[in-house]
Length: 224
Image (tube, rainbow, N blue to C red):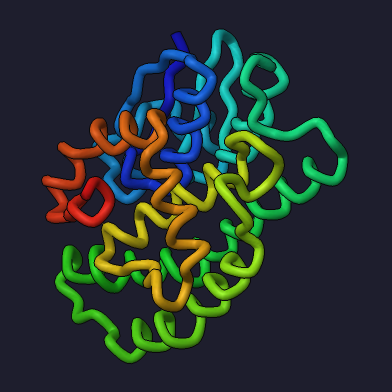
């Protein structure tokens, strides 16, 4: 059985867990929080040269980075592929995953730091920064995605790494108290609700409940 190092509240850990669930691959989760030294395994620097999560162990292989892990899983376990084989669709799926990586860096990371990490460290959240993130940065990404969504799937006719990336990021966006307003983003909102009804997302959110409860996050808007 594969071992996954990470924590479900991490967007990138969630991406890998969704991929494993979609492929029907069992795994055990070793909770690792990079900013909490007592959670790090002794060989953490070897497992994760960047110090980031997630990392997967599959037999003798250890591999960091969610994108690399998902591509590895597709190559080794090709049943239920998550990356389309059609060249155009493949390129678009990988592009969307990268685009959501930028959304994480520009929007989710600063919001998480200000709303969660800063208070834990005894610091005061930067309200002006959060306002800029929500009024200037987030709409650029959401507007683009609204124009790209056309049905149940972002690329092709089945769940792909593109959908996993969007869903994994928007789940954390919701945990942080934000929404995808249906009035402004009707296509994106409907698409996200479709993802949340998939068995892999339902199972993932159920497994995340203990962690969300501990952090004071609500799943109400995601499971309603």
